[in-house]
Image (cartoon, rainbow, N blue to C red; front, side, top):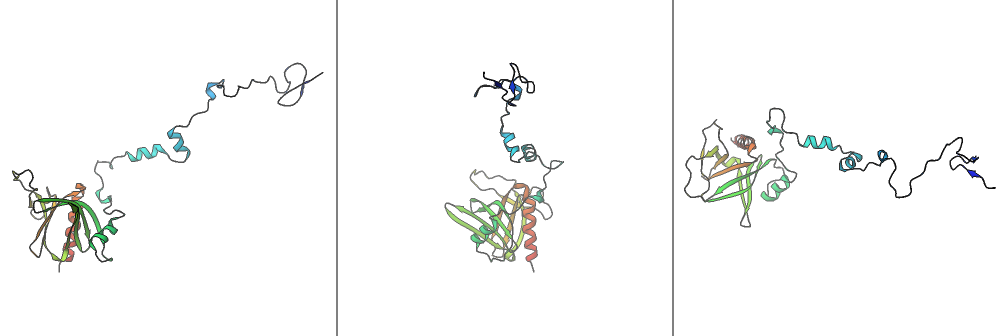
Length: 221
């Protein structure tokens, strides 16, 4: 006569459920849905996946969407003025001595005759430099501060040219009056006048002017 054995504890059953383990629960067939929906395995979504590897998306997203400090005015002094490639570009383009100190790089424009050139302005402790390409040709402007005889702020002239293709015209601002300033006029000892304008980013114009004029004044005898 064959005996029935409990599948959990191995005891011999006497015609009923095991006195120790109780009735056995039916196991779901392979591939069948679980009998208790509340115990379904939770599927990891994008948030959970990143949380699992240690990235808190809640903190990341909230910090990236934060605006400027209270008052709504960004701290312009905290904006970096140099890129990781600025120094190598400066030395490679202008062939300056290796000990020359690059202070800042800005985007800006300059008027050459009737043409507006768009490029990059590099400020060092010795030179005010501009570089761009026009019609596939590189254009350089290198102004040693020691050759500068006058540096003034510029604002747009009130009179507008009837020629829509004409470059913008500017007028120097009185000393000590920065209101409306958006450009820098540099006059050199060879009687040339250079007009740079539309600093990028525009909110950095004050730093662009301050750094340029400071280096020029420091180079004067």
